[in-house]
Every structure is written in structure tokens, then in C-alpha cells.
Length: 215
Ligand SMILES: [Zn+2]
Image (cartoon, rainbow, N blue to C red; front, side):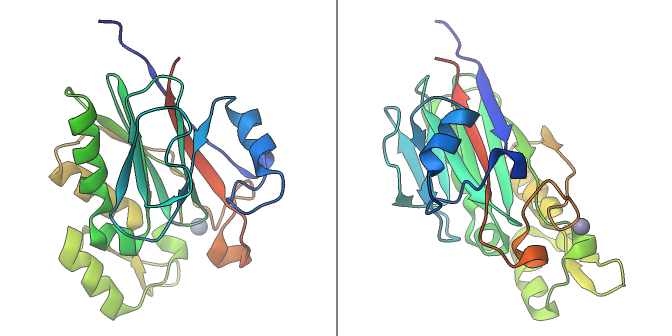
């Protein structure tokens, strides 16, 4: 059996707005990777779709997508929420994980979906997202997220207010799902001039995480 190598890319402002409704977005997607893209209508839930041919299931309401088909590009969009890639031997998966998705269980859902597509070890990469120093969070909501994934999410902003550590939550959820090998690009969308942040800019532009198996 020939293994297909997993590939992924986190885009930035230089790649243009990759939100689904932006003008001419197909051209920008093709410039990032020239394969048929499956992108999602994200709803902060735990639904994961399985792509069985390149371009299938595009526009479906879900927050995770997985494929074992070489040549299928699968994508999520984010501006402060965490884009998460889950990579294995002959399987790639991506998830859009904000705090609501984390509470809903999108991380274990996407790990389970990847395991159903292909057995074997998985690793993960967390992309550009808002970091706790820039992410003041209501204590009541913080309790909800801590109840779902643990107290590791409790943090502080630069000025000492309660804050959510989204990446710590993603890491904890991945570890609970048996994925301990997790890299982090360590970019804060609110601080980075090369990334969009809904909270910092108030805009609707999005970067993407796109993953695929080499065709
Ligand atoms: Zn920041």
C-alpha cells in the first residue's frame, strides 16, 4: 500500500480573504492549493463531514471535515477561533474550534472521524488564533469551557482580567482523545499584522486552514 503524505497550510492576509462569501474566493483558494476545495458553513457545533471525492460536501453546515482521498482539499475558515489540523497516514482532517465548538466536542469528533477513515497514529497542529493575553472572557462562560475541557483554559489577559486559553483547551481535548503530539504555530490573530482578527478588527475576513493528501 502506498501512503499519501498529508499536507496542510495556514493562510494569512497575504493570501486574501478566504471567507466563503467573499468575491472571487475560488481564485484565491486555487492560488493556495490548486485542488477541488471542500469548505464548510461553520456553526460552532460538533458535526464532521467525510469527503469521499474531491470537492464533495462543500458548503455543508459543519465544523469539521475529514478525508482519506488524495487530491481532495479540505478547509475551515477562522479569524480568532482555532483552526486545527489532524494528520495521519493516509488521512487528513481539519476543525474550526472556538469556545462553543470546544464545549460542543468538535475536537474529539474530528479525531474519531479521522480514526474511522484510517487507523494509525495521529498528530495535530493548531494554527493562528486569539491568545489569552488578548482574549478577556466572562467568568461564567469560562466556567462552562473549564467544565467541558478542564481548568487549563483559565488564564489572564495582559491587564490581569480573566481570559480564555483556547489553545490549552484544544490541546487538552486532543490529549483526552488520544492525540498527544500537537504543534502550535504560536500566532495570536489579535496581535499579528499578517492575520485577521474579528475581535481586534471587527471585520469579516477570514484566513483558512487547508489540508490535503498528495494526489
Ligand atoms: Zn494577541
